[in-house]
Image (cartoon, rainbow, N blue to C red; front, side, top):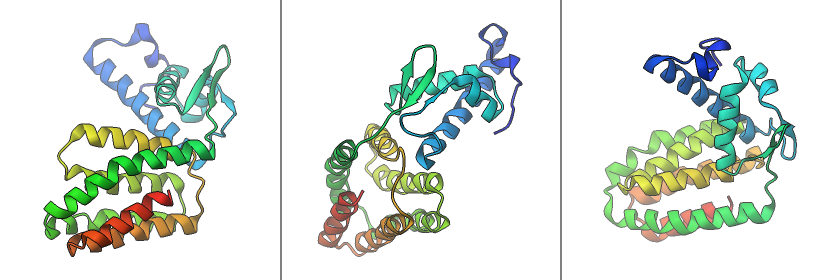
Length: 221
């Protein structure tokens, strides 16, 4: 991560004008992305406590943008505040992950099936590069890269509904379901392959085939 702005620039009293605010927001956003990737990869271990200064050293920034990014992660349920120590990574049990998968299924499956009946095949074909990207990411074996590619595909599908609020809620559920991404490389490849199979069914206007595939996809999540 670039050491943009140096340490002193992140202090509240030293941010002056719109440019300073934009730079600070940019650093915070980069730190947030890096922390999310570390969570998905399991580099931030569930149950462990991490301090903002130590993480700041890791990312080459001051503790302030790390603390702000961690506060956002706390709002999202990924970490919890430990007074005078830092932030503890939340442990996600099998029941919680199963509940997240169930909610995602309840939201996404009906949308995909509705779109299967109305969206023309050529629009589905435009999503082929996103599906193929998930296969490559699964083969690369990087959980953070796969999680990003996986969401890009789901976002592309749900975006056809034209409902920004739906996409926002689905993104939050998807992100929470990925921390940490504990599935094997074989599972990720099977998951990615289902994306391409689903697209084949949608392009062919095979609604029943799409129904079976999308339900199996979330059952395995």
